Image 1: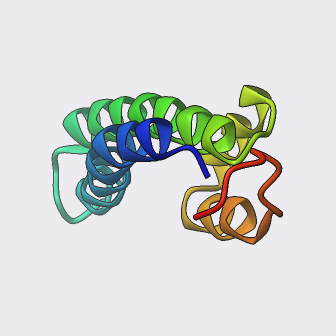
Image 2: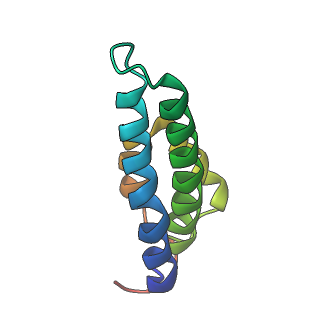
Image 3: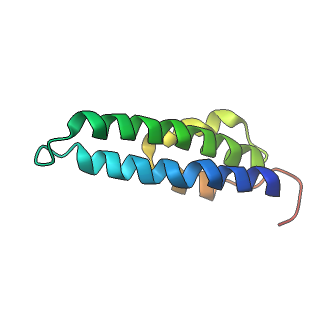
Length: 90
């Protein structure tokens, strides 16, 4: 795994997943802030896309694997299970 890209994936991915979760909670009909919640969820998805792209590159995969961000936590699990093809040892 390539350390530099793995570190960048955390910088983008962690805030992205948090924004997605908080945004989804705010979109609850009882919350009353559905618009702000949607905006936060979309921003979180954008950050998660960037984080997943860096993570895929760190594993020696094509950055298109970042599309797994649309599956949120499930996409993270799928990416984590991919075999490392970077050619570097951990």
